[in-house]
Image (cartoon, rainbow, N blue to C red; front, side, top):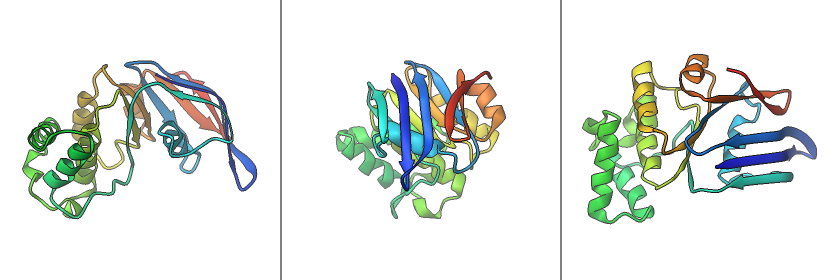
Length: 198
């Protein structure tokens, strides 16, 4: 569960983003919408404790993982990218490779396992980064523009991987994706995050 109350973010001494109330219940899918630079990514980073607010209450009760819009993959094979992430997440070598292949298969990109990750297309890299993120056992998944480099089929596969055992918060400019996938929507409007109807 995620619960934010009266958060304020300050930049260069000035208030630039305010979050009166925000919540995401277990198994819920919540979208963040707003123009580029409005603060959607910053809010996701705050939920992962990578950015601290100037004031307010921020409560994230379960383990969270995040998929950034521009993934930074290591200069090695796709499988090694995932194997290293699995090791850092506590999987044994055998289990890590097994779990890595399971996620590649779920995303229909198992044929990329032995290709160099940095040579892949943007959409392929995003799916590899998603598989890598999911190797960390987490109940909360934060996604920064998950459909930005993906066609509809690839979006559907990614969304199908996130069933109701996960709480999902995602930023998006894609109104169709939001309508299709989100339970609730928050809009960043003039520096304030407010819930709106779908």
